[in-house]
Image (cartoon, helix red, strand yellow):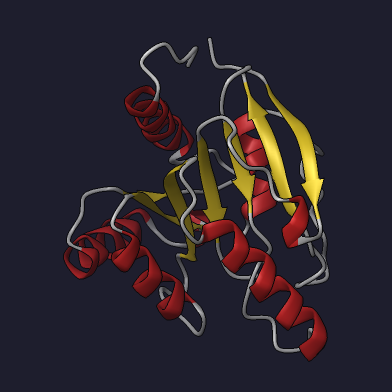
Length: 198
């Protein structure tokens, strides 16, 4: 039985970011790549994470409690050109404050659009992930937009690009890949805490 996922806290300022807490996995990706849809699919709830039709709308870090002793942390999306410069600066400061030297961070789920691969700010985030050196799962969203052959081709390509087998083709619409993501989350939290409930 999968643990319940609930919204625990919403943070708008670097000063309010939690410290000395439970193990965390953060979810990173471009605006409108499907972070909220991923969380809702994992939680098996339609509106736990609010899905905006306006890219760049989410301006906060959202902590989701998984069971009772670990968090999924949804970071603000990046890369939407129409977001005001002042908002982009705030997002960057918020994300930077969260990521830098964070002991609680045990893994990163990096979302990429299966239709396009890496674009824009994805390159910067992937480079940061490489320097960070921790556990990462690359999730290609909207995989239902590709044929089964296209998904296989995309996965093989980026296994080579990222030099890892930790790649999942995912669709919030059909549920493709959801079980594989849960498995990776479970393994990551179990490595971080031997008595995890997952």
